[in-house]
Length: 130
Image (cartoon, rainbow, N blue to C red; front, side, top):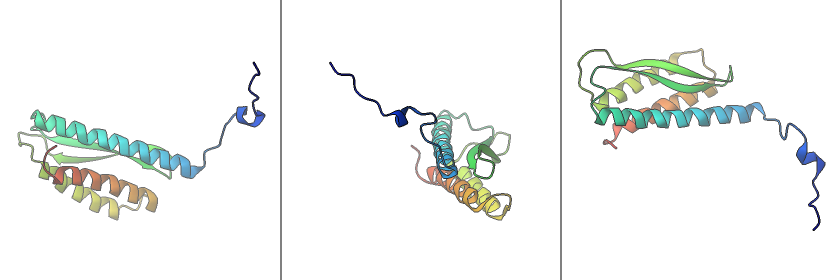
């Protein structure tokens, strides 16, 4: 039986160099997946009434200037005994979107990405419970 021939170029390391655009796209995808998990976990905890004592979120996003995953912290419901209502997440996300729009520390790409993630969070709680 003949051995398959291998092309030497397919065995060189690194197999392919990632461009900065590829790295940023992967970072955005990672942040999107993390936000999806965050939304699922919030709904799970809301159904179990575990959010009735306040909520502070750390929303992951990818900063394309620093090429790293970072977190945007904000309060949805202050500590106390306030019953969870999904509209609180909607209002908090809308407030945070406005803050991000005004914050000049972000590149335009990172700002659009972060606003998109906050909008995803807002829409997830603007609709009826899952």
